[in-house]
Image (cartoon, rainbow, N blue to C red; front, side):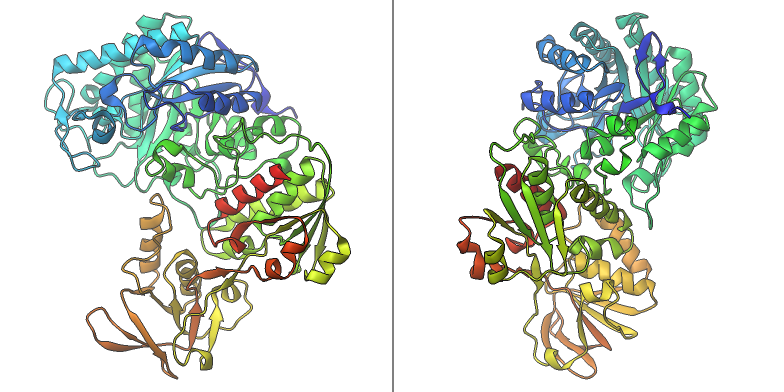
Length: 639
């Protein structure tokens, strides 16, 4: 049966070659002033070349006062038209259509970005604690006009369609949601009044661009964990009003601290808000765009069941811009998987001018400089270590034509990815291990498992290039009596290599320690996590940290922070609390998760004997998956 994803489709008068949409994902790849940069062009070119039928260029501010992010693209002035026009031409080059998302941050516009007080439907505190200015009726009309003028610029730049951002608690959504809108005039109160601003924007934009350019809006199908937030029933009414106002499609997203798109699930679930798209589909006759972790298989199902007419992919296209083409050619196991780490989302609020990054795609945002090109002279490469850094270095080197051998001392590939995927809510990491292993096999990398690398063995093989990705060793803290207790490592616990008693103390309150604690708590153990510092899991990104810590508390895990380790006795771990009290935490088993130290012993023995030797991953410094992947990718390019 022919894939529904590849069936042509039409929004208004805009004809699409397929039903895969690149969702608008803010990248912060623009210039400080909001101009399109070479980096932004390369980013969108890779996704257009990747085969999507429609690319929706990210949230682009229609008024300087509405700018919400550093390096956000702008369309608030005619000066932005030339750069946007060049971007459109690049997208069109590959047969894709280009739309642009018009955006105003409202209450979420940044004081630190604009230097101006944000505006909103009501005078509420912003995320920075500053109070927004409540818009007057005349000021509302002025913003409506800003959307219309921005739409004219979009049409002049050559965009095929315009999307109005009416979701995610930005200005238009702030009018729609009772949680933000406290007005008592014609723009507040009952839903028809709260939707008035959106309707006026749609009508103004439609009038500005004419009938040949389709206009649609992105709305929340539901707000989760937001007091007074939009329900699906209200969203259906909003969608109906938007259609009546002239919207040519409805793009259905979701918002809120408990939104499925903002959290992880115990096991990976695709298309987490497809039910919302289905609900909106029942309320309108115009096309509906679904979004939210939609895999190719889920996309086919959504279209087959009539839940939506098009499927939008955001993070999946960050991880692999070639996803559509790989789907079309049936190469599903060649798709670099998104592991739902939410790191790209965290980057929006922490990286500033760096722009978003991807844990599994080192080339994101560096498409031009990180192109994989054939090696001028193929060489004999030995990679020691089958973790993420080693596998990625081997993969890229093999793609470039080098003869690559990989040694791994364990009986399987993956390194710490294997343990990471065992922890609760982390099963999606296993797909990265499977992907990398599949690629190495397809590229004819010679993989030797259970192979302990020694200086003599390396010398016997005689590689021209040596890549050492030997990982890290657990850090053993110096605590008197520790050597006489029942002590195991977090890795041994997760892989089922150690027996654990009913009362457990986990020493170390970072990611590994806390994930191991959750794993043990799920098995019914009484777990206490100890840490010298004041807070737990500081290296977990802000998107997931509160949710993660809340899960631990709900499962009965105890936290003991700001302590000093004294000794280990037959009763358990003796500590001094921050109040100065001496306390024994009873334990049958002590789990070490106090960090790691680079395992560079092989480099000291053999690394200097090969003229071209590289170190990659945790043997340089223990860090995140993304750091290991990036280092392996870079080394693969340099060889």
